[in-house]
Amino acid sequence: MSSSCGSCSSQSASCSSGPSQSDMQAQIAQQENEIKVSLGKIAHKILVMSGKGGVGKSTVSTNLALGLANRGFKVGLMDVDLHGPDVCRMLNLNENLKDASMEQGALVPTMRVGDNLKVISLEYMMEDRDDPIIWRGPLKIQAIRQFIADMDWGELDYLIIDAPPGTGDEPLTIADTIKDAQALVVTTPQDVALADVRKSINFCNHVKMKIIGLVENMSGLVCPHCNNVVEVFKSGGGERTAKDFDINFMGRIPMDPQVVIGGDEGSPYLSSTNNSPAVTAFGALIDNVVKNTPAASVSLKVAEGGCACGGTCDCNS
Ligand SMILES: Nc1ncnc2c1ncn2[C@@H]1O[C@H](COP(=O)(O)OP(=O)(O)OP(=O)(O)O)[C@@H](O)[C@H]1O
Ligand SMILES: [Mg+2]
Ligand SMILES: [Zn+2]
Image 1 (tube, protein in one colour):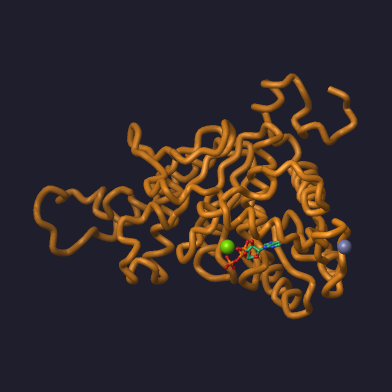
Image 2: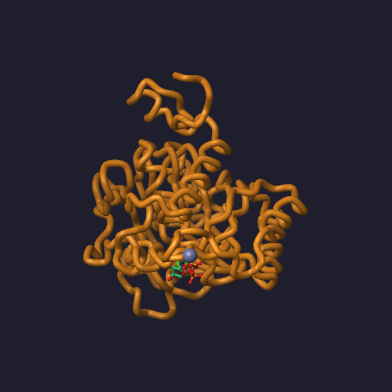
């Protein structure tokens, strides 16, 4: 990350006053420009969020990113949850603590899963990650902005961003910095989670972030014996809430013990080849994301001579 005094004219001399206001403005303008350049090569940015913790944002982010990559899209997965880099754990990438290298003045992600998926975690990028001060409001916001500005993802069809729960600094900074980011809101079927989802929807409306849709996770339980889905909590609340707020309902993912095992072992669920209802449900979620992000993939279209929708349309191309 660049120095906070990067544009100061007295850079080499000892500076007691810090950057002046005009220096700061120049710095912000430069950063805005860097952000524009770095995001300009990414077709779709999706922020996975929820009002409530533990509803499956990291699971959905990871499997969505992996599923899109498996279909041939170029995908980036960015974990901005500073308090728990779950995405890396789920992808078994925690061995590699340096997940980007500096090349020609830009940070380039070095963690890869297959050919199409690049992964970074903001927490791993922080040199002072044990310093509690860095995690406070303005510094945290500035760190996330700088991180986005400095990162060169190359051309991507999708950037999936895993956020911590709630409507705090991280989603706010993403909404403010990535103006065309769309939110994928995750919920669970219980009433309390659905009340929280309304807060997320209101937050998105407030910051003018488009909502790509709502997904209901842990909706029913896949029986380990017969593979049928058993309704544990009442389901369908997510679909009703989506209807009430006039947003897309992207699907229902059942609770499957294999998802937890996959996440814990660092071999995410979608890499398995079994035909459990949860795999089918993730497939339907990915179909819906592709359907709602038209013209996503120039790279795929060119590479395969097929349709940019990833094969979910009827055009037979
Ligand atoms: N469909 C599912 N079936 C079974 N287990 C699941 C499912 N979705 C998520 N889980 C499990 O629930 C736990 C919480 O999921 P996850 O970490 O993805 O939630 P989160 O919303 O990202 O949490 P946080 O708010 O702490 O970031 C994990 O152990 C995960 O493996
Ligand atoms: Mg998480
Ligand atoms: Zn059964």
